[in-house]
Structure formats: structure tokens, C-alpha cells
Image (cartoon, rainbow over all chains, first blue to last red):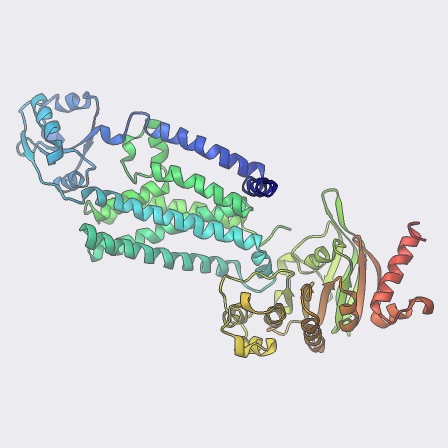
Length: 337
Length: 248
């Protein structure tokens, strides 16, 4: 009995070995509760319907204001019909309202009731069309999110945890006594992790293409590889920077675990950021992971490949990458003196 | 022989703890130099300062006749074997040798490392499955593949069996033909068998320093037991304790 008590006590001591670890262990469920409560403060984001509107300029006067005043309805304007229909297929929109040349409302079979109700409210009224939707549409929607999770985990664990482990095992100290340059060491870490993550993404892409009819062609695959590399560099930079400030291996591991959960909720992986409460949406939009998901979705699902349209997002990702690597490289030391 | 390391009034403090205090000596090479002392004497701290891994709180260090500047440390002229060497999971002796040959940019260095370590036939084994003596031979061979002028080893034979200790000692003697080997140990008999020169470090202070012969000769005839540096170490430590009023 005493052995049981001692073993249990030692294990507890091992798990909660420092005030920081104890705070993480005890604080993490609370933090998670706060995050989830904030994210879902207005109910599940998919409780509210998103209506994609095409050709707003041709809408009868007062229509937009009428729609904007409906509780539980979110409006978004789409420049092209194709993009709006792609949103319908991926369940990112519950309906597509088209005004030009004649008013039509497209909805999926499951939103028949919503469509019938909506047309009765609108002037015109628009013609209701029930469109058969792609079976795996929502899987297509969350595919970029799976990619983002792979990149986030690969970056944070791949660089952050590895660096902390090397520091704790004195490997960095050993390397400091050799002529190996810091850039060679960092490039090796990036290269190995990039190879692994690209392989993971390639497998994801193949599975997505052949199991779930993901619209992934050669151009999409090339964009996917580029975005993966850019996103990975960004999160490797975050992991690198974290490892420069949090020296202890297990503390870093706890911190990464704490970071991943909100990143998954706030990066538009499962639902659009616009569905979040306003201040949280503002924060979520600034995350590099959100930009990665949006860019991937734009390229793969909405057929956007024009550099001009993608440039702002790419610039944000590049800025994040540059910022995190600058902080990390400036703070990196082989060892503490 | 010429001056390799010169240390003057070196001190290192960690908060309220003084790890090294007023340490001064000059060491010439090539030869085997032992920094001897009990656990906690400050041996590793001293070694890390000499390796450019730590900064002294006070005092100066000269390496190869030039003041030690950690930013321009002569990494190509030194080799280091740490007290606990890190090895990647499942890395083989072959891969380990390959890595350090590449880091030091030595053509055919991998073969040289495996040959020096006597591991050509066991190159495909994971390092973690090698015996303690084999691993240590591999680490020493990898740290000296670039023919450094100065080789540091922190407790290189701790936990090794006597046969392995002897083999490591022989290897260090071979290396000392062209390279200054500085090792720390608390094994006085091993030091006696290997070292040409010794620094006795206790509680962060140098109790005595000199060639093996000079240190042994300083022991009064009546206190010699034929154990060389071990006799000398206890002679100088006892003398210091007597000065402090402890045991005398």
C-alpha cells in the first residue's frame, strides 16, 4: 500500500514538477473552457445561415437592407457565380442569391425549408432552385484545415520541441564547440521537417483526391506545395522562437499543446472566422494559420489562382514568417553562458 | 612544448555559489593534462570556460597565446568530448562518424573515425547498443578526427570497466603525441596512469598544479604509498586542510 502511495506521489511530482507546469496542467482546462465559451457564445456558427450574394447591384432597392436585418443570417458578396456555388457545395454557404439576369435562389436539398421561407420574404420573389450538392462538400471545406493542422503541429513540435530537446541533452552545447554554423544547423532542421510535412501533405492530397473527390489538379497541387512550405516556414519560425524563450523541454511541450487548441478553433478550419464574436474574429483574421487555410481554400475550392488575388494573403504569411524567424534568430543561442 | 592555456585569477559565480575562485595556471602542450578533483570541485565549469561555453565572472583566459574571445573561438583547433554525449535515437556508429566527419569537413573522416575507434566491423550497430568503452572510443575519435591542437574530455572514463579505461588511456597517450589533451576526472589512479601534468581542484580553488613527477616528488617520503598522483592529491589536500585548521 505504501508503495502504491509513493509511486502515485512520485508520478504526480513528475507531472507537476514546476509552478509553470502546474499552472499549465490546472489552467489548460479552464483556458479551454473560456475559449470554447467565447467561440460558441452565439451558438454553433453553423446555426446561422450564410447567404452568398452575386450581382448585388442589380438587386431591387431595399433587398440588401432587408436581408441584413434578418437575425441568424450572414451575408457575403461574391464576385463570381462559380465561387459562390463552390461555397454552396462546401457548405460554407447555405444559399446563393443571384440577381443578374433574373433573381434566383440556389439552395441544397437540406436547406429546402430555409430557401422556401426566404423567397417568401424577398421582393420579386426570386425563383427557388434546389441544387444537388457534392457528397463530400464539407470534407472539401475542412481539407485545408487538415493541411493547416499538419503544418501547425509540424512547425511547433518539429522545431520547438526538437530545439528544446537538443538543448536539454546538451547537443546544442556540443555543436557550439564545433565549426558547424548556426545557419547550417537551422537549415537542416527546416529541411528535415519540410520533407516530412510535404510527404504528409502529399498523402493527404492523394487521399483527398481519390477518397473524397477533392478537386486537386496539377496546378492546385503545385499551389498546395507552395502554401504548405510557406505555412510550415512560418510555424517553424514560431516553434523556433518559442524554444528560444521557453528553455525547459516539458514546459515547451505543455505550451505547444495549449497553443494548438485555440489555433484549431480560430483558424477557420471548421467554420468561417466571420461566424466568431467580433473581437475574436478580428484576432482570428490576423493569425497566419487563418491565412493559410483561406489561401488553400481559395486555390483548391474556389478556383482562385490569380497572383493578384492571392498576393495579399501570401504577403501576410511571408510577413509572419519573416517576423518569427527574425525574433528566433535574434534570440537563438547555442547555450546559456 | 609551448603555452596552450593560461588562466589568471579566474572566478565563476552562480548567484551566491562560487564555482571557481582565484584559479591561475599555465599549461603547455602537447601532453596529457588532468584536472583532478572530487565531484562538485568546479572541474566541468572550468572546462566549459576553456571551451568558450561559459563566461568567467572575473579573470582572464589565453588560448594558444591569444586572449579567449567566445565570439572568435578557435573551433577548428579544438575537440570536445562531453560528460554525457547526446546521440540521436537509433543512430549507427557509421552515421555518427559520418556526421562528425562532415561537421569538421574531413575527407574520408568517417573511415578514420571508425578505424581509430576500432569499430569498422560494428559500424552498422546503433551507438546506444555499443558498450560504454566502444561508445567512448567513438566519441573521442569523432572529436579528434580533424587533428585538433587541443582536446577536452570531461570525465571520459566514468562508468567504464578497467579494461575500457586502460584502452581509453592508451588512446589518449597516442593523441598526446601531437595534441594537448585536457581531461577532468575524479579517478586518481586513472589520472596517474595517463596524465603528464595535473591540476588539483577542490572547492573551486587550485590546491596544486605541476608535472606528475614534480607533484609526486613533493610528497614526503613517509607519506608515499606508491600510488603516484593519488598520494600527491591527498598530500596537497591534507596540507590545505591543515592550513584551514581543519584536520591538522
